Image (cartoon, rainbow, N blue to C red; front, side):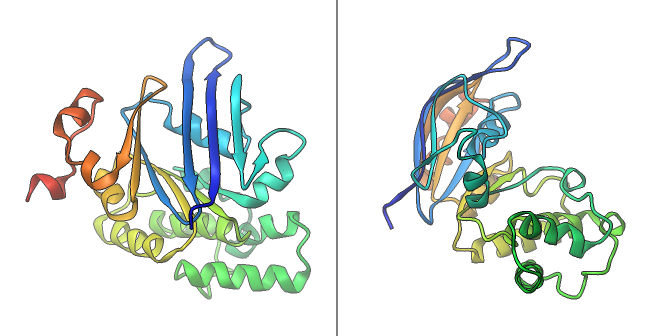
Length: 244
């Protein structure tokens, strides 16, 4: 597929306190593509993600999802197409039980009772958390919470899956399970992370942000082997490349 599912044109954003977080960002994402968004702390990665589903409103430029411009008029339609999984699962899980958390999105999208149950069951199955509907979300392990957070998004059947630091604070086994799960998904994925080995495994293309600027973009294999480029922007070679 070559269809553009996400188009970012001249995107700029300054926070109310005057911090200039994004400067004239331009890139596209094709349907089915997995894009890694990398850069040092404060580069603008999370700010960029929050523009994709309209949590933040750009000062200048345009964001289009599936050909729909992201603005207040179209925000409901956009959020049906873009699912965001935040870094801290406790910010995403706020209902009494796993079922309630995963059902929250479909209910608010107007799904019928039958559709809600089917969506919840299907999403939990995809993250290998079937038969946990009655568990209390905040009693889960951190790795389980990460999976349920992903299920809350998958239950809405989005076109684009946006993940902010998906592997942070996961132990090696749960990190490996997450990578396996994401690799099996055919959704378009946009992943902002410091875990460059995860990017190397999951993403065909990478963009590098630094101080709000789009510093580089290109093929993951080539860009993540460029030691000088990575170090220039506060990054290091992925461990799997270092060890070769």
